[in-house]
Amino acid sequence: MSTTEQTYIMIKPDGVQRGLVGEIIARFEKRGFKLAALKMETPSKELLEKHYGDLADKPFFPKLVKYMLSGPVICMVWEGLDAVKTGRVMLGATNPLASNPGTIRGDYALQVGMNVCHGSDSVENAKKEIELWFNNDVKQYKLDAAQWIYEA
Ligand code: GDP
Ligand code: MG
Image (cartoon, rainbow, N blue to C red; front, side, top):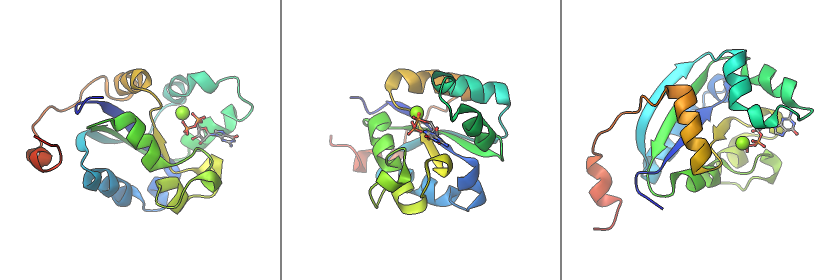
């Protein structure tokens, strides 16, 4: 576990359309994570098929790609202690009906095919996704608040 661990978090088209961008960013900021990269993108089918390559055999794959192509997404890299696992906890379960209240999906979604956000599921996949979406163009800077977030 490192304080410089990075995770790839993406607000899906439904999250953008429903005006949840600020809310989701605020949750990661307030938790103490450092924003390392941020952009809005209209991804190509090819990019999405790569991003979700592990799911290519699933029956819902075409529906998933169509959903992700339905509007712009917000791409982010968040950095901090245990960022990958904690990011997943903040997102909630894949199926929003199984997500706890207090999580993003548990507060703002009902169905798996409209579940508002993506988060890397392992450090290894986070690295791959940050390369895929940002070509590793991630900012490096000192977060001054870190002294009030991390123990000395
Ligand atoms: P995640 O890591 O929690 O996002 O879940 P997965 O990696 O297993 O799946 C990727 C995304 O595919 C999910 O976030 C959903 O948007 C979508 N998805 C997963 N399972 C289903 C399903 O059974 N039906 C539909 N329509 N979409 C699904
Ligand atoms: Mg996943």
